[in-house]
Image (tube, helix red, strand yellow):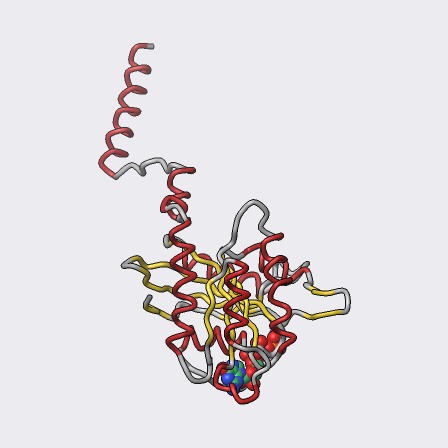
Length: 254
Ligand SMILES: Nc1nc2c(ncn2[C@@H]2O[C@H](COP(=O)(O)OP(=O)(O)OP(=O)(O)O)[C@@H](O)[C@H]2O)c(=O)[nH]1
C-alpha cells in the first residue's frame, strides 16, 4: 500500500447537537473529496496513553513527533494504493477508553465512531498491563456494536522499544489475538514505521476484499439516480424550430 496524497484534513467528529458546526462541515468536505473511490473507514481505539495518536500520525505521515495533544477524536483522510487500486481511507483517532470497577466505559461519541467504522485497530501498550486487560472487553464491545457482521480487527501491541520495562509478554498479546481471531502486530511507533504500515495495510486489504466493487459512492449515485442526458445546442435549436413551425401551422389553419 502506498500513501498517495495528503488530501486534507483533520476534523473533529461531530458531537450531539453540532450538526451545523464547522466540525461537521469539515467532515463533509472530506467525504466529498473521497467520493468516487472505494472508502475504507478505520477506527483506532484503546486505553489512554497507549500511543493511538502516535500510531495514526506515524502511519499517515511516517513521522514520530513524541508529544501529542490529548486526544479529542480526529478524523484523517488519505488516499492509498492497495493491490493496484486507489482507495480512500479515513482513520478515526479516538479518546482513550476509561476503565471502571464495573468494566469498560465507552461514551456515545466512541460508540458512534465504532459503529461508523469498517474495521478497528485496538491498541495496547506493553508497558501498561491494564491497557492489555482491556482488549478482550473492547473486542467484544466492537463486535456487539456490529451485530451480524464480523468486523475486521487488528490488535496492536505498542511501545516495543521499552522492553526493559514491559508489563506484558509479547506472546501473551499474540495468544489473545489468536483466541479472538484477530491479526496481531507488535510495534514500536517511535522506532519502526514498517510494522505500523503493515498493520494498516492488512486491515485495508481485508476490508477492501469484503466490499463489493459496486459499493463505491460514485457508482451508487449513478445507478440510483439516473441523470437525464443534457441536450446539446443543435438539439435545442431543432426542437425550438419544430415548436415554432407547429404554432405557425396552428395559426394558419385557424
Ligand atoms: N517509547 C515510546 N513512546 C511512545 C510510543 N508510542 C507513543 N509513545 C508515547 O506515548 C505517549 C502517549 O502517546 P499518544 O499517542 O498521545 O497516546 P494516546 O493513546 O493517543 O493517548 P490519549 O490521547 O490520552 O488517548 C506520548 O508521549 C508518546 O510519545 C512508542 O512506540 N515508544
